[in-house]
Length: 162
Image (tube, rainbow, N blue to C red; front, side, top):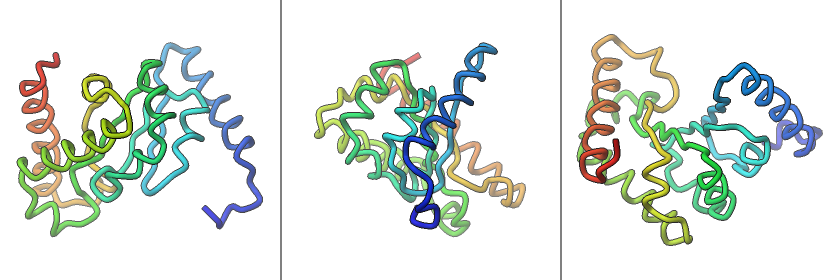
Protein backbone atom coordinates (compact mmCIF):
# COMPACT_ATOMS: atom_id res chain seq x y z
CA UNK A 1 0.00 0.00 0.00
CA UNK A 2 1.02 3.62 -0.24
CA UNK A 3 1.75 3.59 3.51
CA UNK A 4 4.90 1.65 2.67
CA UNK A 5 5.93 3.71 -0.35
CA UNK A 6 9.66 3.45 0.48
CA UNK A 7 9.61 -0.34 0.32
CA UNK A 8 10.49 -1.58 -3.16
CA UNK A 9 8.65 -4.45 -4.84
CA UNK A 10 11.89 -6.43 -5.28
CA UNK A 11 12.67 -6.10 -1.55
CA UNK A 12 9.31 -7.63 -0.68
CA UNK A 13 9.75 -10.44 -3.19
CA UNK A 14 13.26 -11.17 -1.87
CA UNK A 15 12.11 -11.29 1.76
CA UNK A 16 9.13 -13.53 1.00
CA UNK A 17 11.27 -15.77 -1.22
CA UNK A 18 13.80 -16.26 1.55
CA UNK A 19 11.12 -17.23 4.07
CA UNK A 20 9.35 -19.44 1.54
CA UNK A 21 12.55 -21.34 0.76
CA UNK A 22 13.25 -21.97 4.43
CA UNK A 23 9.74 -23.37 4.89
CA UNK A 24 10.14 -25.58 1.80
CA UNK A 25 13.54 -26.80 3.02
CA UNK A 26 11.73 -28.22 6.04
CA UNK A 27 9.21 -29.98 3.73
CA UNK A 28 6.50 -27.41 4.37
CA UNK A 29 4.22 -25.47 2.09
CA UNK A 30 4.59 -21.70 2.20
CA UNK A 31 1.45 -19.61 2.26
CA UNK A 32 0.56 -15.96 2.53
CA UNK A 33 -2.77 -14.50 3.58
CA UNK A 34 -3.77 -11.12 2.23
CA UNK A 35 -6.76 -9.35 3.76
CA UNK A 36 -7.35 -6.91 0.92
CA UNK A 37 -6.42 -6.13 -2.62
CA UNK A 38 -2.85 -6.89 -3.56
CA UNK A 39 -0.37 -6.91 -6.35
CA UNK A 40 -0.68 -10.68 -6.61
CA UNK A 41 2.41 -10.86 -8.80
CA UNK A 42 4.53 -10.07 -5.73
CA UNK A 43 3.30 -13.19 -3.94
CA UNK A 44 3.57 -15.32 -7.07
CA UNK A 45 7.07 -14.09 -7.88
CA UNK A 46 8.18 -14.91 -4.34
CA UNK A 47 7.66 -18.62 -4.94
CA UNK A 48 5.03 -19.29 -2.29
CA UNK A 49 2.81 -22.36 -2.62
CA UNK A 50 -0.53 -20.97 -1.43
CA UNK A 51 -2.24 -17.61 -1.81
CA UNK A 52 -5.00 -17.17 0.77
CA UNK A 53 -7.18 -14.11 0.44
CA UNK A 54 -10.48 -12.58 1.49
CA UNK A 55 -12.43 -13.85 -1.49
CA UNK A 56 -15.72 -12.74 0.02
CA UNK A 57 -14.86 -9.03 -0.15
CA UNK A 58 -12.29 -9.16 -2.98
CA UNK A 59 -13.59 -11.93 -5.23
CA UNK A 60 -12.58 -10.25 -8.48
CA UNK A 61 -9.14 -9.06 -7.37
CA UNK A 62 -7.29 -11.98 -9.00
CA UNK A 63 -8.68 -11.47 -12.53
CA UNK A 64 -6.41 -8.51 -13.46
CA UNK A 65 -3.42 -10.78 -12.71
CA UNK A 66 -4.73 -13.68 -14.78
CA UNK A 67 -1.47 -14.32 -16.65
CA UNK A 68 0.50 -14.62 -13.40
CA UNK A 69 -2.28 -16.59 -11.70
CA UNK A 70 -2.39 -19.02 -14.62
CA UNK A 71 1.36 -19.70 -14.36
CA UNK A 72 1.11 -19.97 -10.58
CA UNK A 73 -1.61 -22.64 -10.84
CA UNK A 74 0.22 -24.50 -13.62
CA UNK A 75 3.29 -24.64 -11.36
CA UNK A 76 1.29 -26.35 -8.59
CA UNK A 77 0.33 -23.20 -6.73
CA UNK A 78 -2.92 -23.18 -4.79
CA UNK A 79 -5.54 -20.56 -4.12
CA UNK A 80 -7.20 -20.67 -0.72
CA UNK A 81 -10.47 -18.83 -1.24
CA UNK A 82 -11.45 -17.13 2.03
CA UNK A 83 -14.98 -16.93 0.73
CA UNK A 84 -17.00 -17.42 3.91
CA UNK A 85 -17.46 -13.95 5.46
CA UNK A 86 -16.22 -13.56 9.01
CA UNK A 87 -15.51 -9.84 9.42
CA UNK A 88 -19.10 -8.91 8.58
CA UNK A 89 -21.18 -10.79 11.16
CA UNK A 90 -24.47 -9.79 9.52
CA UNK A 91 -23.29 -11.18 6.19
CA UNK A 92 -22.28 -14.44 7.87
CA UNK A 93 -25.64 -14.71 9.62
CA UNK A 94 -27.50 -14.25 6.32
CA UNK A 95 -25.26 -16.03 3.79
CA UNK A 96 -26.35 -19.35 2.34
CA UNK A 97 -24.34 -22.18 0.87
CA UNK A 98 -25.99 -21.51 -2.51
CA UNK A 99 -24.85 -17.85 -2.43
CA UNK A 100 -21.27 -18.91 -1.67
CA UNK A 101 -21.31 -21.42 -4.52
CA UNK A 102 -22.58 -18.71 -6.88
CA UNK A 103 -19.88 -16.28 -5.69
CA UNK A 104 -17.15 -18.86 -6.32
CA UNK A 105 -18.60 -19.80 -9.72
CA UNK A 106 -18.64 -16.13 -10.71
CA UNK A 107 -15.00 -15.76 -9.65
CA UNK A 108 -13.81 -18.77 -11.62
CA UNK A 109 -15.85 -17.65 -14.61
CA UNK A 110 -14.00 -14.30 -14.46
CA UNK A 111 -10.67 -16.16 -14.46
CA UNK A 112 -11.84 -18.48 -17.22
CA UNK A 113 -12.79 -15.50 -19.39
CA UNK A 114 -9.20 -14.28 -18.93
CA UNK A 115 -7.86 -17.53 -20.39
CA UNK A 116 -7.34 -19.70 -17.32
CA UNK A 117 -8.63 -23.26 -17.57
CA UNK A 118 -11.61 -23.51 -15.22
CA UNK A 119 -10.72 -27.10 -14.31
CA UNK A 120 -7.20 -26.00 -13.33
CA UNK A 121 -8.61 -23.35 -11.01
CA UNK A 122 -10.97 -25.86 -9.43
CA UNK A 123 -8.27 -28.51 -9.03
CA UNK A 124 -5.85 -26.02 -7.41
CA UNK A 125 -8.35 -24.41 -5.02
CA UNK A 126 -9.61 -24.93 -1.52
CA UNK A 127 -11.79 -22.92 0.87
CA UNK A 128 -11.27 -21.12 4.14
CA UNK A 129 -13.13 -18.52 6.13
CA UNK A 130 -12.17 -14.96 5.22
CA UNK A 131 -10.24 -12.85 7.75
CA UNK A 132 -11.03 -12.72 11.44
CA UNK A 133 -12.85 -15.92 12.39
CA UNK A 134 -11.18 -15.81 15.82
CA UNK A 135 -13.34 -12.85 16.85
CA UNK A 136 -16.63 -14.61 16.20
CA UNK A 137 -19.01 -16.05 18.77
CA UNK A 138 -18.89 -19.84 19.06
CA UNK A 139 -22.19 -20.08 17.17
CA UNK A 140 -21.02 -17.94 14.23
CA UNK A 141 -17.58 -19.58 14.13
CA UNK A 142 -19.30 -22.95 13.94
CA UNK A 143 -21.52 -21.69 11.11
CA UNK A 144 -18.47 -20.37 9.23
CA UNK A 145 -16.61 -23.68 9.53
CA UNK A 146 -19.69 -25.67 8.56
CA UNK A 147 -20.13 -23.48 5.46
CA UNK A 148 -16.46 -23.99 4.50
CA UNK A 149 -16.86 -27.76 4.87
CA UNK A 150 -20.21 -27.94 3.03
CA UNK A 151 -18.99 -25.69 0.21
CA UNK A 152 -15.95 -27.89 -0.30
CA UNK A 153 -18.02 -31.10 -0.30
CA UNK A 154 -20.64 -29.73 -2.69
CA UNK A 155 -18.16 -28.37 -5.20
CA UNK A 156 -15.98 -31.51 -5.06
CA UNK A 157 -19.05 -33.55 -5.88
CA UNK A 158 -20.21 -31.14 -8.60
CA UNK A 159 -16.82 -31.07 -10.32
CA UNK A 160 -15.73 -34.64 -9.57
CA UNK A 161 -12.64 -33.59 -7.61
CA UNK A 162 -11.23 -35.86 -4.89
